[in-house]
Image 1 (tube, one colour):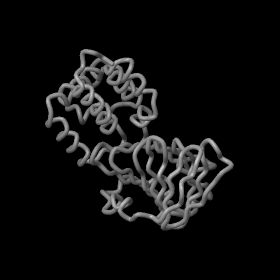
Image 2 (cartoon, helix red, strand yellow):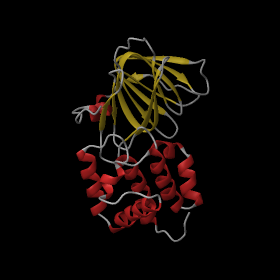
Image 3 (cartoon, rainbow, N blue to C red):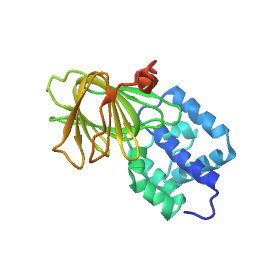
Image 4 (tube, rainbow, N blue to C red):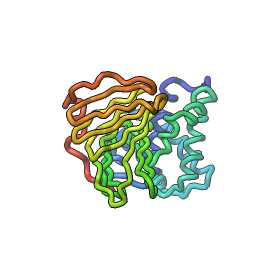
Length: 251
């Protein structure tokens, strides 16, 4: 780590990199901009960290004007360079490793939420993807399948019928989940994935033992690691209450 940085400034840099990723995405709501402004104003270290964002952007030829507005017009390449520079400020021990980690991948993901934010997206097939606070996911659709890669945090999925009959899958570090015409939530933890099924069913394959599979039905919950299934338990409604009262749908 960079020995010249205090712990509070390191944390501020991490938050700044997250906020930069959020504001430079394709879909930014007024609520997200307001939360960024609140974060920026609440602490001098946050203001210092955001100044590093401005400095890095200026080095890359960023256009003048309000920082939050400028971020909305960045190319993905510029965004990656800025975030990489921010993470490197944390030092070889904390910055580059974070950039290479799955959390780093999440900072570059298609969809991300900051602390306290929830985001609801309608995907190209009509399915609904809702991200809980501090979550990140990539979406990849092709001629053969529909895939969501959950990097960190928690998502809720409501699948739509697909005219091409492509399977809808969610990938986590621990395995692959295939929707069987369903509504469900997935939470990525450090060493396990939590699956809660509200409607229909989900098939789960383990990353390290793909020959093993479980079918989790509506009203059931399952935790699993890359190599082992936990016991199927009754669904705790409280665990999915965050998905109620969605924010405005974004397309």
